[in-house]
Image 1: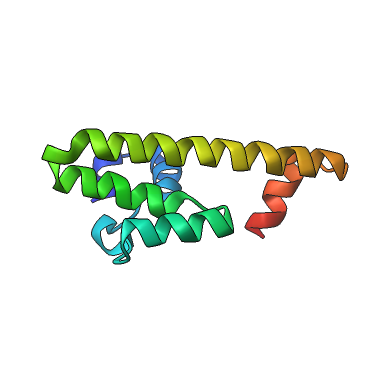
Image 2: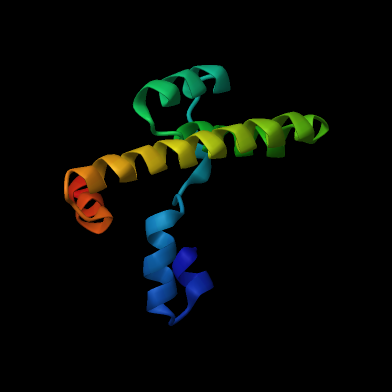
Length: 105
């Protein structure tokens, strides 16, 4: 489906295929949002919790404001964690790009 949407634009397809889930429903954790948030606090990986909050917001439009607050809180924590990681990397004398590459490998 993504290939169809992107047509002949291979750069767009390559970009989106790295950032979008092929099957979004399967990618959303079955765990409760509170549990995902606790796990994120420990691991520093907030993406599963953010994904779950966005999914829950779409499923529960009556609670939109609640989920907006949750997403904003998680985004703030993600930024804070990223800034701390960047400072640590810079202190170690690595560039952010090199460290990012190292994590991907």
